[in-house]
Image 1 (tube, rainbow, N blue to C red):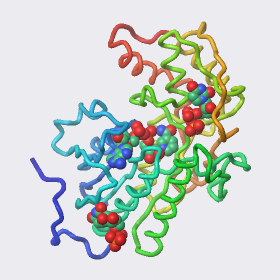
Image 2: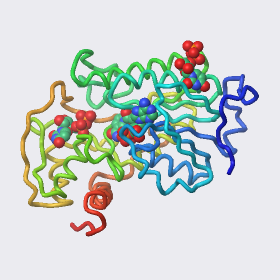
Image 3: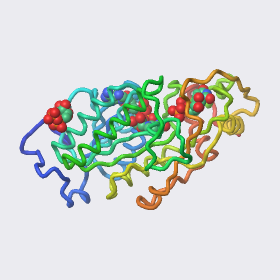
Image 4: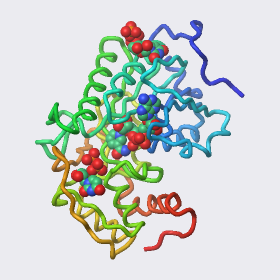
Length: 331
Ligand code: NAD
Ligand code: UDP
Ligand code: UDP
């Protein structure tokens, strides 16, 4: 089995601080932090299919080994249990940095991965979030908008953590010549999404399948834009391979109120599913929709899968995980 990474070995340090151009065409050594998670595991599938060597670094905080079981025998794949809050020595060409719980540790993890990128001259991609726009006063959100985040709010730990991660990434890029890429990801759904982390799409789908009422928070008139995971992964890879730092909004501009989403879930799974209203959380953004002109122009990217097309693909996966393979999706 070919070693795809090595512990710190000075002869492998790329002192120039840049990936030599020739390397782009060769087999790449790629690290995906958070690769056992929802988005990461889909990204890993694409990178391996392309012929890259992939190391996943994950502490299984919210990710699952199950998401990668089908790759464990692939000789170009390695799975490391590691918390990115601890320093990490690897020799790689690209770092997709997805590892992130909703807590400040993502700042330390990002610092370590930037330090790694600087030492070995790897290109670094940060998966930031639309939450950097907070409860936006501009609609739709363009990358030049600075956002409206409450620094002491109940949600601010995640938002401010990602804002600091963007700042660190730009400082390492400007000051230390790290080749950086920043993606601002809007709400994404699809197979392998966490069943119980409270996101609205996973909640509604699991509730409808379990014949429980769909829990709509607040009046249900707040909006989000939902992107299917394969569209996101395509955007992340184009961003990594392209020449632009970003930040780039990666999201589907199709905007839905939570009541409209509930309707799509009813149409897809169970027209008789009931709706139950619950109080909303504080500081919940009222609306969110990406302006993706920049990604269209500079990355040649736009989403292809609509909510009505993507949702059934996720429903099949949730059925399997909730009930085993008893039944296929209907409707
Ligand atoms: P996820 O929870 O499924 O994946 C995150 C992965 O990171 C998990 O496998 C988890 O075990 C791992 N992880 C967490 N802390 C770690 C640590 N300290 N060390 C090592 N591994 C650690 O979430 P996801 O939806 O796949 O999100 C991936 C990235 O995309 C995250 O950075 C997230 O903030 C960003 N993002 C996602 C969405 C979305 O809608 N899914 C939206 C905006 C941004
Ligand atoms: N780091 C790492 N792997 C590496 C190089 C650095 O995890 O291959 C960590 C390092 O331990 C430090 C962080 O990245 O905590 C930032 O490193 P950098 O060299 O930029 O800063 P310094 O260590 O000089 O403060
Ligand atoms: N939401 C809801 N019911 C749920 C979970 C969430 O109505 O069971 C709402 C939530 O109040 C928010 C929207 O759905 O307005 C999106 O929430 P999510 O946590 O999925 O994403 P984020 O708020 O991070 O965009």
